[in-house]
Image (cartoon, rainbow, N blue to C red; front, side, top):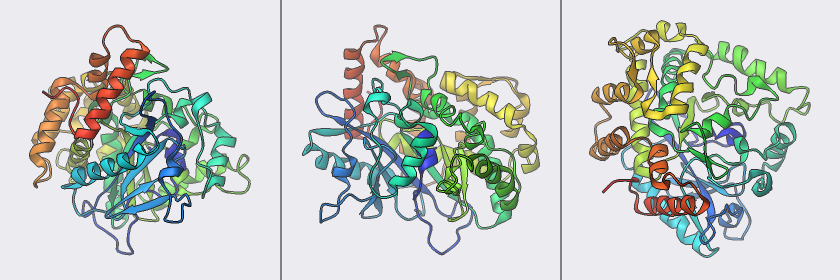
Length: 429
């Protein structure tokens, strides 16, 4: 979700759509968010505006880097890499993203800084370390801070991967929204990468999502239950979801600064201005190849549901938001080992053998096929590693060990930074 905080404060968004309208799965947009940290101490370093400068030295929200763009976020210690225009395929994006990671790293070296992967900084104190982006669109970020107080983890300490999928018309929107809504609860099983906060192990493998879903508690309709409500058209979406958010925010935002579709902080949000739905529940991984493998698996799951291979759209929309949120609760806590017992939910994926672990359900989805192309073998290896060795959060805990301390956490962070540099997964021999 532009992580919690950003979820709401995504003003520009990835993959700006051209004037052309794209059909289902005809294009895809990807966003990856990384922490900027001091190379020595590994503390967050709020210097994104020193990195994002034009030739005249002026801070910019976006800097083009070939087919990719470097962008700012709500807070100054985060850099986003994104597809500037929607890509025809996911193939090749991992290599392109990694090349820009290395380019950004070379620029950051001049400031004694490096990029760090992972969905949460494990020792950051957001009450002390948070610095808002103060430049263009600063009034938007200030409004979020005034209304919600962005100093908490749920705003200031979150990094995620976003996937933007297009739709051409209301019928495609209806099918895509229903499919994404059903897929969201099982995504943390692949992507959870945030088991440590405030230098301690939490009860959740996906702590980012746990804190994210409470960050807008002052106006509960902003994030809802993270799982979107079922809708069948743009008109219904605007009335049932956006209309309620705007009405609830109005007393706190009389100027209407936040009266935009991006204020919606659910786990997937409709971006009607560019005819896409943006998936926001994925923790960022240790390297682009892992992120793109998870994006490929996500796209495959959504495509299978959109094509109604295992269930009709009406059955997807019939499943209550509360039931889907209950499945999400289990994957936030237990990742790939989460036990899914809801038979109605499992039936939507064609699973009829009783309760199952989330990783077994993902095995079934992946067996049905990822997108063909040159990166498919690398994606399959990455996903096999995640489902076999555990989601990144579990592998981080194995790396830190039983005696969790700031030195052991710092050592784990250095290993993760090296994984990002090499574009390789944690724990792969």
